[in-house]
Length: 109
Image (cartoon, rainbow, N blue to C red; front, side, top):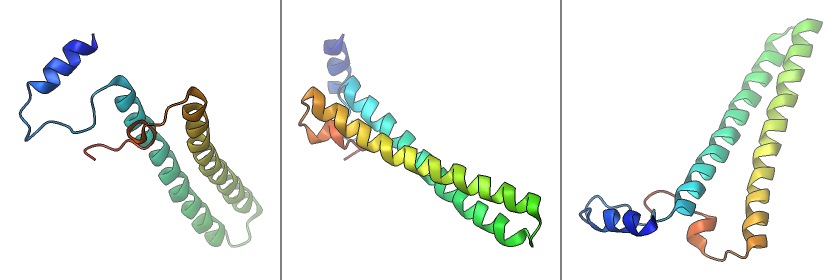
């Protein structure tokens, strides 16, 4: 299966060939890094939105409660995405992978 994958990659011209995307683990690590980065980015955006909600609530208890819950959920999402990075490193180290291409894979690098 991987022989077919490598043969098809080798047939592509060097101008458009991806440099480090040769195995399923490379694709999985790129996908995982994109998902973790997206979740963290969305959590920071919702954190800022919760702060705007808080300042615009003008003392209304319902709006204050809603903004506080939004703040807590965005902080939890940020912590979960940071924990996901730690879990990824722990799993990779437990398996014994030392290749930096698998641990910190990014497209085209």
